[in-house]
Amino acid sequence: MPLFQSFRNLPQKTRIGVGLAFFAWGAVGLYISDTAEKKLGFEPSQKDKEALEAVVPKITLVERDGES
Image (cartoon, rainbow, N blue to C red; front, side):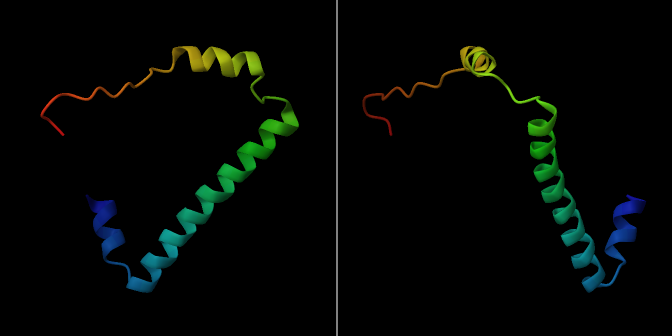
């Protein structure tokens, strides 16, 4: 808890700045990782996508009488 307590002791504007910085870091990381995959040739092929689709569980909704 000492790290969280240190964060809570920061002024409100500083905490907002830290939060926005983490948000920006994540957004840049998502953008860069997608771009790097394309440039380095690590994009999944259609065969890979089909193999993944085969192992993803399917969800089927079943309606029951008298229950919502």
